[in-house]
Length: 169
Image 1 (cartoon, rainbow, N blue to C red):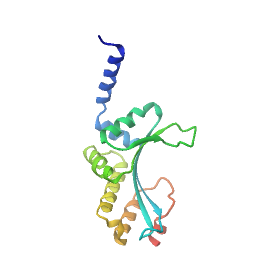
Image 2 (cartoon, rainbow, N blue to C red):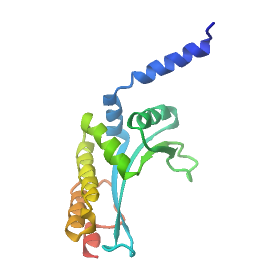
Image 3 (cartoon, one colour):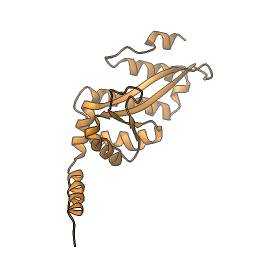
């Protein structure tokens, strides 16, 4: 004996299977962010911490796309995008763990390249992660290379610290 609910569940699973990796990559082209930032830290040898994160945001009506992407890459967590702003009801998928970034996210985008300026951002992001993995960020020359890579990208927003401030300290 079957019910409408069982049939509906089957339809949902089938529709999820129809979301291709290429579609998800295109979704990231529009709504994703490969973030590399710098945080002043006097307790570190070079005085700076390098932050690496991936963000993918969407309104609550399309939360299923964030969930599907998280399942597809096998990592990350979902949270309200701006929890303190009651007008912003969007959600964000966040991936911070460097091992997950390297072993799960990077291979996904090597298999399914992006088709916008975001591809260049991904390339820089992957290079930064590779330099950090090799511990190059702990030496002045490697740190300088990372800063130059990050600031080689066009900036649409103002950053807290300029390239000159980071490199001069």
